[in-house]
Image (tube, rainbow, N blue to C red; front, side, top):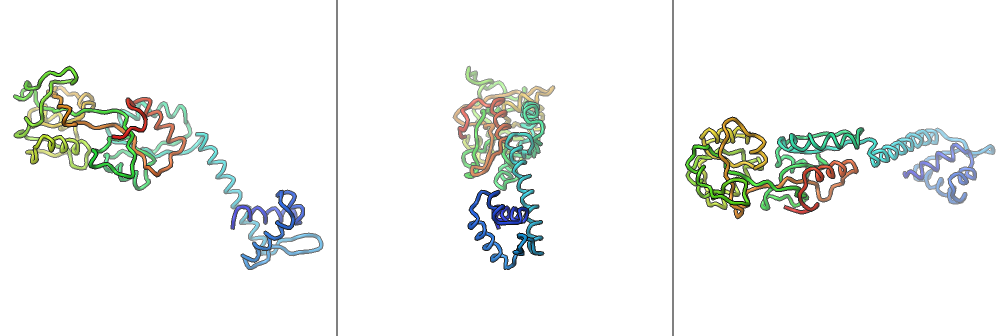
Length: 316
């Protein structure tokens, strides 16, 4: 049962003759007659009584006509809705974002997006990057703004479009002996310390499911610190930084996070040599085979404009 067949029966019922219906539908009368015959044969029931005064609906025909009218109206309404969605007059997008990036990104992008698309609803899911990966794969999210995983953890079905890089820093107390051991480097924001010097230090870590922890584990592995002495594991990088500043241990955090969460304790920051690849990339994550609406594309474009410092489409 196709929309064309529904329209054929509806028009015949309203015009009461094959000839008038054929004219209205711009089809040949014999072709329309044959189509009606095929429809009735497929249903195993007559839809019209052939009378001298024209065609009248049988009971089955009345039911078919009622159903055809409803379905065609629904289809017409849907076409109108799709047109509105395509023209950004209505719609909804489902965005994933990490908690910290939500604070930074949404405050700058949402006001702009709302001005351009005032009737498009934005539904935001705030999760850690690993959860966002899974939600993209399951189709729950249209896209996500997050931090790309390391090369070993890239999801093959997800496209990670890098926007900007953020190097990690070593955080420790200003009174720590290593705080004065860093070497000045004009290309680094802070004195540089080789993470191998942290081999015997107590570490304050985030949970393994968090992208920060994955980056830290990678750096320590490259520094040949296979079994770091972990004295505390928690979820808040801010708490980890605060405790490191008070001398409880050392931790590693992204530069942007370190600057965002300055406290009265003012920890010592040390940069990490480039060879350790200690950092992550803010990115837009999308399913490679997924569909992005015009509203999705508009939101992504605004994120690129506000935060991108790389060519669109570059991969981590």
